[in-house]
Length: 158
Image 1 (cartoon, rainbow, N blue to C red):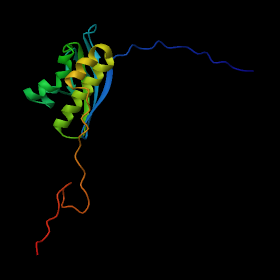
Image 2 (tube, helix red, strand yellow):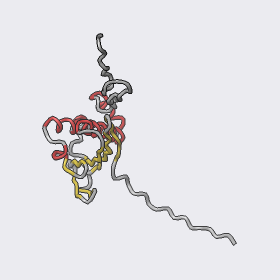
Image 3 (cartoon, rainbow, N blue to C red):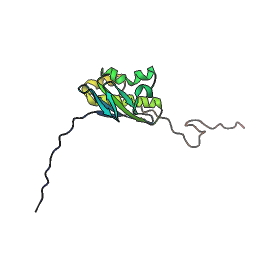
Image 4 (cartoon, rainbow, N blue to C red):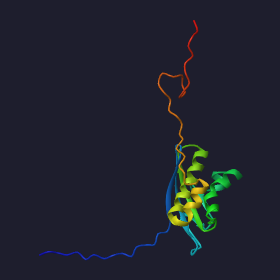
């Protein structure tokens, strides 16, 4: 006797966020954009966030990246696409230093916006340089040299 299993299809949940990864030097940033035009707020990592909020490693972005120069940088992709208050942004960033992490966040945010509306946002982001991955990394130290990547040992004259 052959038993047949009854297959039931579960309704698929609507996608609640758009995700992308940004990188710069040794830093990586996992960026999630939550579209909150119809909802008031969403709970992420135990915190209630609303449209326009920006969390980096469960902290407010102004605490993680203080200063006006940093504020202009991390709001750049949203400003260019005119979506400053349309999304709630959460970022998990690790590795590297603060400047590399900031650049990774900006790169990841631009890539996430590109996945949302490729035809409209890509030309704007590309023209502003947000989608370009900066490949420059620290050059490794070579054996036989004096501590740095290109520093030579001094030789005696006599």
